[in-house]
Image 1 (cartoon, rainbow over the protein chains, first blue to last red):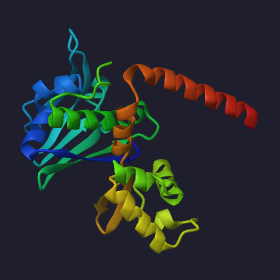
Image 2: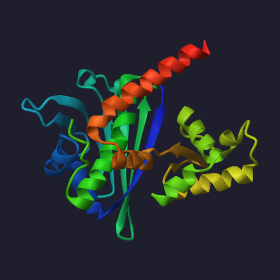
Image 3: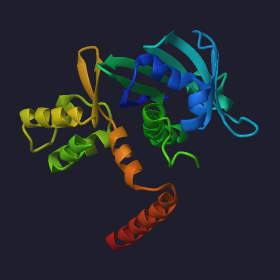
Image 4: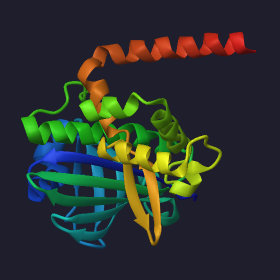
Length: 148
Length: 105
């Protein structure tokens, strides 16, 4: 696995607690991400990324590496088929930093295989997810273009 | 959004973004390689890009790495492109690419 890495930054009006909740609380993610992130968020626990369709399709899985609410969360990230195959997991770090009345949210996604399906999906996906999260938290509504 | 447009209005800054798009996470030294610009000019342009949120800095030990942050560009896109237009725009872009590639050959 090569170590292609993306770093995304967005400024969101609000507190780190609100942004943390926005990332993990299904009441929010259902609206702006059309997914739920399911876990107890303890280091070592599994987490699941489930679509909000009728059968709650499992789209991603991984492990919680580090959780320091509301500042830092580190997860591994993989297709469900690779759940047990840890060298196929990439790694996502969420960093939340309060700057006056805003939060600087930085997402670092690394350990991606350059040119892979996952590489393409996340590079198209994160900017949309982050813009939609910002819209959700600041206006109470996700981006109009979000729902497929 | 003004800052993003101002940052993008300069061809040298767009060139720097192109280079990060090709290889993300470069040092200043790597970015300066084979460029007509002075190191000082590159530093200044990177500062403008960083202020506009188009470039994010990550420190890796002593190395300062520059990453392309496309989130502000996505916000511009979301402002003026509607959901139903997206597929048609993709089709148009693909058509343009195919035709232009043929005329290149």
